[in-house]
Length: 67
Image (cartoon, rainbow, N blue to C red; front, side, top):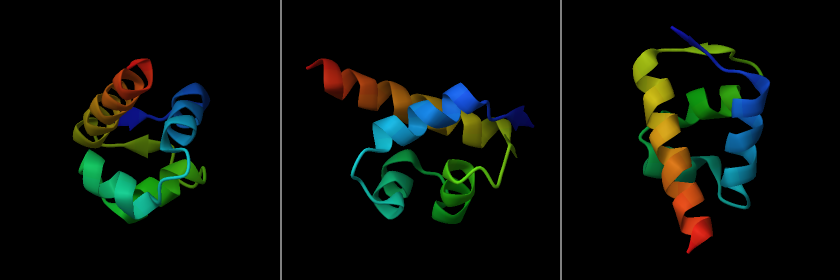
């Protein structure tokens, strides 16, 4: 299990922007209910696989902003 830190959660919220949780779920491959719980601070630990999916999604979003 991996801990979701406050800075990581805030990075996810910022990168999510105006997208819906459903859209974020589809593009990241993470269950939308899990995402909702993470974004709303109801879940502080996730599986390593989920954490990795979120890291990859966050890197892709950051790359989009740089373009």
